[in-house]
Amino acid sequence: MLPLRLLTPRRTLFSFAKKSLWQLPSNSGPPIPQQELVDEEACSDYGSASFYPAKPGEVLAKKFQLLVKIGWGSQSTVWLARDVSSNNADDACHEKEIENHITGQQSEHRGRVILRTCLDDFEVTGPKGKHMCLVYEPMREPLWILQRRFVNRKLPLPIAKAYIYFLLVGLDHLHSECKVVHTDLKLGNILMSFENESTLTNFIKRQQPMQCKVDNESGRTIYRCHIDFGALAGREIKNMIPQIADFGLATRLDRPSTLNGMVGEQLGTYPIQPDYYRAPEVILGCGWDFKADIWNFGVLLWNILGNKELFQQVRDTNGQYDAKSHLAEMIALLGPPPGELLAKSKAMSEHNWPQPVMNETGALCNNALEFFGGPFFNAEGKFCYNELIPSRSLEDTIPFLEEKDREAFLTFIRDMLIWLPEKRKTARELIDHPFLKLRG
Image 1 (cartoon, rainbow, N blue to C red):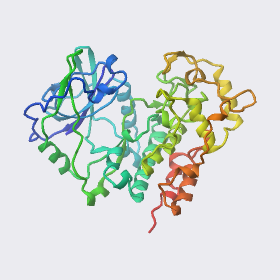
Image 2: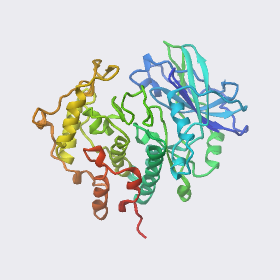
Image 3: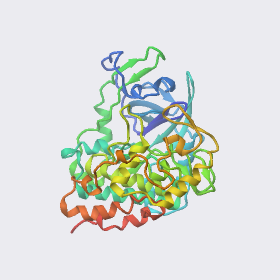
Image 4: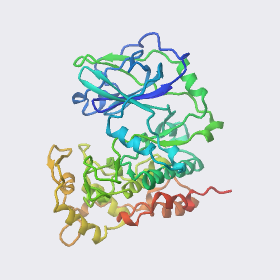
């Protein structure tokens, strides 16, 4: 079986299953009240998006029969499907192009298996246009769901260290061999493999009809996700490995690109990354490269190890991203930024992007300082919002670690959370850090 991702006129995902014995639910589950928001309906831009009206039993591209909806996002729904033929399809979107580039690398790098790329793709036509469909090997669940299976939603430290090691190996391949920046590292984009083949088979056999409702405006039937693959076989957790997924926002730095804006051939300029994980060079408009992923990954370790966010004040009372508060918290944890980073920010702000970009407030912006609400520092390099700097230190943020592990972790994290991107360690260098070594 494979996951199929049904994208809006942007994209769609499928997880694929080959075995014909897996059957569809016989009918729809209990109806969902019309006023209840279901899955993708909760996205802020749902009304402006055009999701494909997928239904269980539907066969797409004369090849994939939809079985069960297993995921959703702001741009796509994800369905488990079975392969009923053997047709091939043409490449067609940025995500597919990036994944083709990754799979096309002639490399024996061990990190290749940590990057989840699609096996096939095709287009379907819905009421509001074409939808790109990408086909993948099925995975058990994202890392945030796996965490819920443990006490206090925390992975045991030896398991977490193993996963961090695997992910760094994957990032090393992505950066050093593929010359790609992921730009969107988060728990939802880290997927766990099945611990054994029977788990997926049993999931399909016990499926009940999916609950659904009909959207009055579009007439589209919306199904509730079935994402519970059952209890984890604890003795076989050693067989599970994480994979980095979703390259829809990734950027190649091996050649000029118009997708995210480039300076020369090795530096991106347009805003990237989820709010909590955004690197300082992105906010300050200094240009970014692979080291933005390293910052992102460093911040993500608080989620992996402690099931918590490192940064606590990245959004204002209206829920909008607040760059000045985010920078203030960075200053609290890391000290003030070096003058050379601020000088680069000032120099880059004098050059507009090739195309303006609209920010969250609806303003059309020509550079990063406009986009994020700068400037943040005065002519002397002093922060303009000292009242926002909290009384926190990096040492205060890791109560989830035992005392004996804290010093090693802090040295590990300080190789990633550094103002100057060029001083951050690479993924390959981080793999050898003592923190990741398991005690005998």
